[in-house]
Length: 471
Ligand code: SF4
Ligand code: SF4
Image (tube, rainbow, N blue to C red):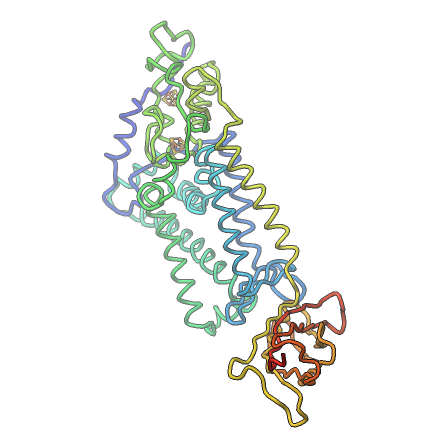
């Protein structure tokens, strides 16, 4: 017996979605249908990994400190075994530039993969929509609920949904602040009312932002607020993989019986409208590439399911380049993609090198600008310097300070220096030279600072010794 596939007109479906915008208690005018498939599994598992990392990291320890901890009051940033200081901010700039290049590379290759699979807005919206489906039911049930007058059942369902949303939003805000205030301390202080006002304010702000963005605004953030959506087209070329409808194969669209219903006047699209009903931004992929499309591939999974039921080949809606859709071939090795790829790899290697070669000890020296030189009671010539020593290790250190490169020079000042982990100190020194050793009005001199416990931790800094011109 032949069977009919749903015959909702696609464009009508989108219109229906918009027309059914509820009058009360509804959070969005778009009612998406839940769908499963290969791409949704990828989104689900990548989302679980990303969320797991986000929520778990502040609870993991590295020795006696938090594994990832941005300790702003002490101006230290701990990431696994590494500790970064404000002096290392250049590395952060590089990291951001690398991320930007990574995004360009991925976008030129596969369009808005970032948006569809890993963007926090998408990942959090996914959880919120899942909660919505669990509490209010599938698409039709939600439309019916929103259209129904206020009742006990409606209030109960809506309240549970919003409470769960607020719970997730609070956990998100709390976790964010836990990257700056150790989570184990924050959780106690937060519930005993002893956390700082700033901590409560930031948690409140992030709770509100998450609740509004993922619960109420959803696709509106992607469509109206995210700048990335606006300039993505600049990065696309005709070989970029995009979620696309194969119009050559699909048109002319039209409903039909499941078995034996296809006629010569039919393309493969049965015009069921499922691809529109699952779309979180409420667009019809059959209208071509649109800036609202976040490439979540929900429409691919939906259409593949329909194609399987109809006994047609999958891929009427699929990842494809404009060239393949036009009957050509995707050119993978193209200059723009190669350029971004090479730049990205070079930057990652250079960054890795810089990261593994951060100096554990940093020193600098400044000559006293008040006087070029002075004469001591014994007739020697003296120069005054400020030596700045910064212990960038996670251990307390004991340093020896010596002079190099200047025979006959005497260092007046502490020859040992104790510095706790992550601390710096500026010490004033005088370098004295007998008049007979002043062979030039400008002589090089080098300060050497060496860790007493580990001679491999050392640093040198060159400066100039000024004296009278005796020629
Ligand atoms: S058109 Fe398809 S890929 Fe684009 S946002 Fe809608 S469902 Fe996702
Ligand atoms: S493209 Fe696929 S899912 Fe969309 S209306 Fe046509 S057959 Fe249905």
